[in-house]
Length: 272
Image (cartoon, rainbow, N blue to C red; front, side, top):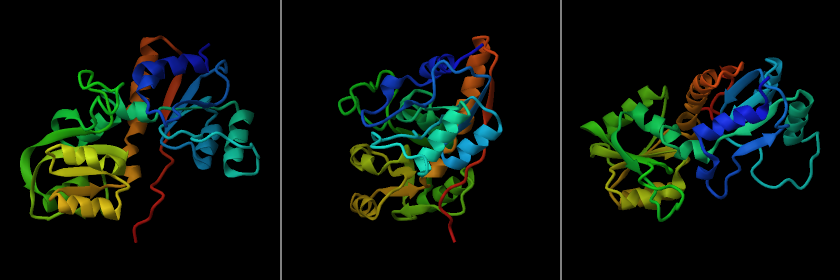
């Protein structure tokens, strides 16, 4: 019989926890390491609706990208949204585990998949090892990627390609629409904090989520382009990525555990 700790060991092989940023809270969020596991589900967020869906499926372990708990709890009141999630999880023996910035950083992880979906070649790191000592350039692990398009294209046409590839009706774009772009920087999730690193590269455009007004003004001054695809669209890719990885690794280890990609989530923003 497999237990939670067995699946955690597999996840640590796939996305080592030491790659997580210092401020992050990747790892086991709730549950008992010795609870038995027959059914694992993978989702982006450990929201109430996702946890409810996992419980209805009689899952034993929920693996998410975003952690359930970011800051130390001052109390645990069960009639709050977080309390309801924790109460439901414990009552149904549903453990919750998150692989966050370590999944972003690891070679072959979310940033690499994002860059591959865009069609980027010759990838290098957006962040440098003097900023993130654990993320060496040699190991090709770190936050963000920089790569090249096979053929140069203007920003307007490139933005339309991004919309199509990610199934989006809209994207936020900053920069001259007729500028020719060849080299692209990317970061899944919220990349606003990496604007300085973007400007230190020779990338023409930065694609990420949660960009701000002043980010656009800074890019304008530096004659660069920005494409904001939204936080959700840049990270929902992790569901199939992790579910696929886990299924292969669990089979290789001979564990009798079923893995399911839980497709219950939508972008919380609506575009009218």
